[in-house]
Amino acid sequence: MKLYSINIEDVIFEGDGIIWKETGKRESLNQYISAERYERAMKFRFEADQKRSLCAGYLLNHAIKENYPELAIPVTVSYEEKNGKPYLLEHANVFFNLSHSGDYVV
Image 1 (tube, rainbow, N blue to C red):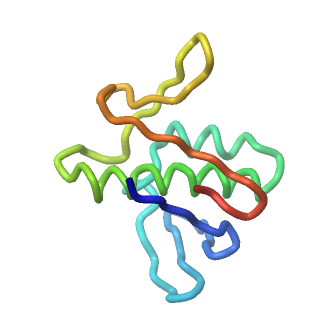
Image 2 (image 1 turned 180 degrees about the vertical axis):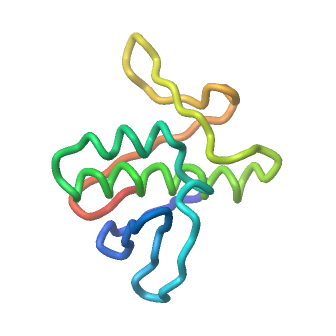
Image 3 (image 1 turned 90 degrees about the vertical axis):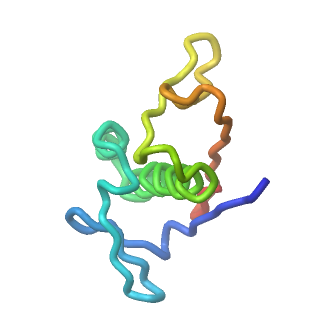
């Protein structure tokens, strides 16, 4: 199992892109973040909460792309009714966990 993490202060979400402050590299937002996640993230009041949600979506899709290259990204995440645990709607056999604390998303 590989661990992925992002410090939300290391990225800028600008227009339709993700910019990595350290390198200046820009990636397409819609390549890694679904429209549903983006819409849900934008409902948060504080920018830091928006960035945490967007970074979590980015990490999930980056990990899927790296570990399951045959799967199309961005993936669609659903939530179990009983406990709210997220799962991949179209790939129930792929398991993941996302967490955040302060400036970090893991």
